[in-house]
Image (cartoon, rainbow, N blue to C red; front, top):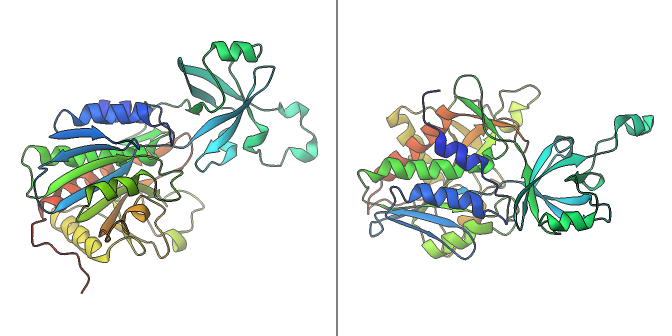
Length: 355
């Protein structure tokens, strides 16, 4: 793998579950300061990086920086930590994992505990584990020692799983969804920085998408930016693995290029321009139907203020919401290239009004 992925690794490895994104957002902003004209953070925690601030039209690029995680709900007298889910989990992938807890005095290591198989009644062994039946063991002898470690109720944690390079250009990480989207929007800005477009472009690392049932940080950042057009970058299901129903999800594979969404919050006019730009640039892509909702930041942006024509570009992702999500760097790079080329094609006469 010849590409320098130091920034990507640092971003993916940073701890940043929904509502506690500070560490990951700081890594993102530090990189943005190398080439963006303005970098800032708002009270919600969204991070912004802008190029050609006075240009027209105004473009918003959104990739959420949060990841799923766990949060401490109770600490018992023996020092065991009980947890609830931040975002959508399959509890089976939590069992047996190591975790990194964000305590008040820094990161603390722990392991997920569960009754040993030998002690589980035979009729119970086939039943799926539930998060409320698991606990975290930090090695403390009692709750006093837990407190001395700087841990208290409400502290968040993530699975302790760093980025891993696989065969070819594939990488695995617990935080692909959607740290990779935050990476793509910033890489698109980097591609534009040497020769700024006529448009004003702002990349936003949004917060709380995984728990943002009311729009999360995408809604507040879109409200403040008042964009003329927005592009959201997220992940979608790669259907090139066993037992996936392509009739429902479409055919999207690693190395097949970005996935362009059609329907619901995705503007058809923006989709048409994205597909035209992809074809002009020789970038492969696939199309995904979204008849009801995209379940991404696009849902929180497209009806903000007077409405924002919004496009959704997704990176095919295997094993979503697991400790080892897998993507292709070729798809990541092509997504950034597509977005940068899209922005370069915009001018003051560009109109996304459906007619």
